[in-house]
Length: 260
Image (cartoon, rainbow, N blue to C red):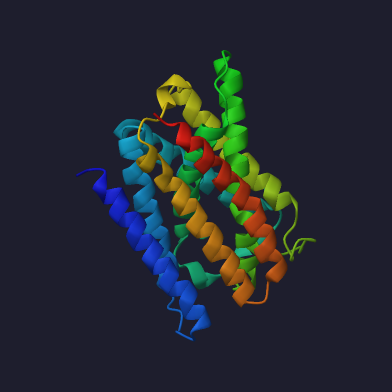
């Protein structure tokens, strides 16, 4: 029964995202609550799936570390311009923690960092040096996560959710932002792996269909982000975002066939 709940959430998330994306093309009015609702659904999926996949303690620690690290980096970024480049959030995403970062932002970081974590687990080979494995795991997981922002950031800037003070060359996004994304999740994953003393053996998967569910979430986000970019006239960002995320998802699905 416990494993059915993430499955139900995955189906609900897919249906809601499909309704929203199709609505763009069928002139169905977009509702402001769709953004927090989809984010919350994916967040709950991540934590419930994680508690089954990693165990309650490790899943909660991964959530806590990811949300706290991302919130800290975001607050520093907004206040100083370090990490990602100078930017600020508008009022469109609701309540701001410390008046700087919308509460939904660290929730969204974990929402996507968990699928990225699971994908990295399929792609990083086990090696004898545990610290080298942890560093490699964190580096690859951070790349998987950062791929999402290739299409997402141009989409959200075009929708006026945040503003860059010094627009950069990639659809107005400074390239430093992508380094900042990678560094944020690299730090979060490495801290988690170290604190929990995670080893390749402790993350060995056993259930193929359950293991693939976070990858499906990743692919749904990939498709919805790309299609939304197309709908608002960001064809280049749609293609870039799709091809940034697609290889990670396909490789994860391929290697998950080796689960026994």
